[in-house]
Each structure stands twice: as structure tokens, then as C-alpha cells.
Image (cartoon, rainbow, N blue to C red; front, side, top):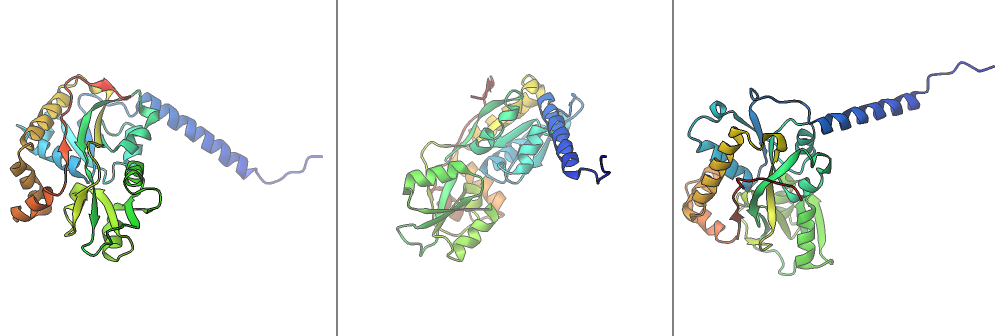
Length: 277
């Protein structure tokens, strides 16, 4: 005779997980939630130099961005789980990503296409004045494999590379837990430490858009505004002013001296989009 026992909680949990995973997979492939022309076109950016350019472009629009139908959300870290989840579930329409985040978004590759490469050599190396010439320990941003690979290519396999949250890197450097740190140039600008380039022509930021919005006039307005901002930033004075506003300083000489230590370049968006490779 079969005994009456307690419900098989493990099996129930497993079934629940399977159902949720299947529903989420369908949700992602369907591009939900569905969006209409009445909804604003949402642009996700991060705390980096590309995010500054996007904010400048939107500030320079001929009308209020809400009137044009554009909205923004600051994801903090473009490689973080929040940004990737927002993309996967269709909560944002345009996103500024690092190459690592692009590689992690295979599940939405049919829903999004590339608009352009925004920033080159945006990652820089920061040291202390008393850092040893032969760097032994270098901290880099957690989840940024492109930073790790770049450091290995530059300093060899023998260097001790420590992944950390971006907010922890300056403290690690100041407290001599590491000899150097790798940061986005905008974050490095906040530190009063020696800074130098770590790459030559390496793409650090990319913009993608939901494929269904390629012909949307709001997207075209964004592209035009962004390209106009990039054209203006070809003049060093404009870059210095953007950084001064960001740093809340009027010391243009100090900011200019910092900018001369890096080799960051800005790219334009394409008027004709292409599918992600």
C-alpha cells in the first residue's frame, strides 16, 4: 500500500523554475513588452564618457526631448545585470553598451541591430605617483573581459589582475591594494592621479537599437543630434567644456591637461543601420 507522504517540494520547485524559464524565453523572443508610437523611445546609457555624449546630444536638441518622444534611463554600468535584463525584456529601445555586454546578449540578437561604434580607447590606466614602474597588481572593472584581455596583452600573463566594482577601484588604488586601475576615462577624470592610454583604436562603446524602430523618426532625431554633438566634440574646447560641466569645475587648464594624457576618440552613428555581426 502506497504511503501518504509530504508533497515533493523539490519537484514542484523544479517544475516552477522550468515554467518561469520557458515563459521568460518566450517573453524575450517576443520582444515584450509591446511598445507603440505613443510610448517614448527609451535610451539606456551608463556612467561613462559615451553617456556624457548622449546627454549632451539630448541637451542640444531643438526641442525638449519629451516633446520629441525621447526618454532616458541611466543604468549605471552597461555591463551590469540590470542593463542586460532591461534589454532582454524590451524595457529600453536604444542602449549604449560595452563589447562584453554585446557578447552577452545573444538571446536578443534578432531584435536589436547596431547603430555605430561610439567611443574608441575609452578605457584608461590610472596609477599613483608612487606606483612602481613595474606594475604587479592591476584592478579593473568587474565583468569587463575586454579590459582583462587588454591588460594581459599589454603586461603579460604574470600581472595579477583583480576584478572590482568601479566604485571600489579608486579606493583600492589610494590604499595601495593595487598598483594601477583601469577605468572609463570619465571616471578617471575624477581622480587626481596620473592617467595614460592603454589601447590604440580599440572600440569600448557601441549603440544598438530595436530593429522595429529603425525607421522611427524619433530615432532619426537622436542620430542627427548625436552626430552633431560628435562633430562639435572634434574641437578640444568642446570636450573640455563637457568634462568641466560633468566635474562641476571651472578649471579648464587642469581638465585640458588631463585630456591631453589620453587618446579617446568619438565615432558617429550610421544613418543606415546594419545587423550586429
